[in-house]
Length: 321
Image 1 (cartoon, one colour):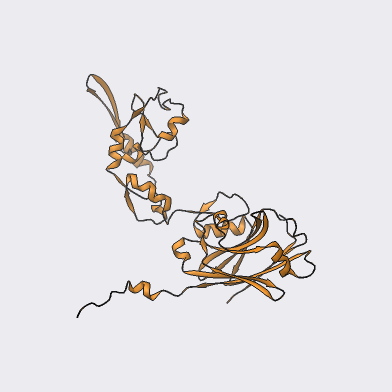
Image 2 (cartoon, helix red, strand yellow):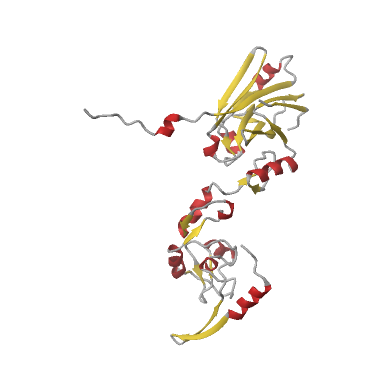
């Protein structure tokens, strides 16, 4: 969807080893040959090998979870990659069959590992099989780019994404907690699915994204504006925002809590969690002969005061006589 002009006014209220250490490790790597049940087994011991390495799938390099499969020669791989390699061991090319590596699954059961986002600040340590579930919701996991105008695959922390939005998506950056946008379109009868992120605001030391878009809602063309918080949902609850649109002595006001960018913009849009303006009403606000859309959206963001009742805990009545 093309637009003619948008006016934006913001008012402010592991360390690497040296060569000697590497040679030392190579010197102490050794091989041995043992006989067990009449089978000659060659064992190569490498000091750098860990149980974590054994649990790494040789195909996708991700951690393996039950069922862990193995071939007749003992080479393992994850269940996802078993179908990808057409039931052939990627190491020795032997047929895999349906052999489970129960020993490795039991070993994994007894282990604890730090969250993979430990380098980003997560201090948690979990049993191996609980680790994956935690990592899906870990507060330290990277954020996805919140730009709604394209399917952007960039991930990172908030400062990195702010720079990415400014430099790569050319998003307007503003400081302040109030905003005033004017949207103008010469042919408002042509409403297609289109998305914009008009600006990113920096206020209260946090970043907020203001979205504005047009789409069909139950076959009716509508416009929608909403704000997302660049952070987690728990922190987003500390803030509120209002949006106002109007004209001809009429106005619509929306107040709500910004959604976290953990929620995709489409999820927010489809939940209708924002200011929705039907096209006919938007044209009424525009005045004139309703042939041109001139929509002004204003708003502000504020920080909610702490709840003293929540901090004090539940009230327990005194039942003593």
